Length: 212
Image 1 (cartoon, helix red, strand yellow):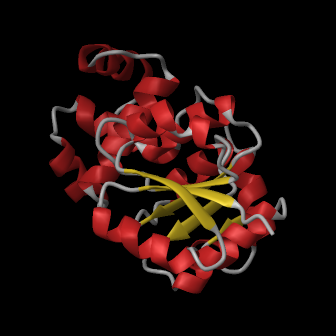
Image 2 (cartoon, rainbow, N blue to C red):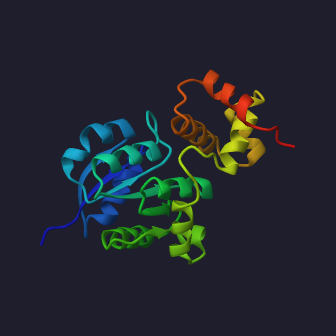
């Protein structure tokens, strides 16, 4: 019997090896990558059924890579395996085509369950995010906004950046990680088709009201 084909993507080799060992008894791992660009270059030829990828990676973040992969491989299921608990980030992942969102601090059985569920055509998110209500959680996020409408969290990040704060300072103010700030910044630039920091700051000055 042919096993389902899986690609793993994470910039931490130790984690890649651990996840591969975890899932290989049931699934076939046909490729591992440590950044989004390498995945885009070589992943489609491997004909994966499921791609399991991190969000915060060098060169290209997982959300951007996943969005492009869904255009090239529309039938392939995407599962994000991440430390990122931010609901706006989870929402963006589902809106752009993810079928699963698993937190890295969840049990290994959660990831196995997520793979099985998405292969059946369903959706999966870690219980810590959904409080057990997966259907409404996913549907709300898939329908919540258009690609060019910024979320409340994105607007907060952009406003603080426009005030001249560094990404580290923004992270401290909002009590999130610097990697989450970077994710929001570059996601906004892609959403708005903005190519430089100067353009992003100009957009902020022309479109945002100061946060009181």
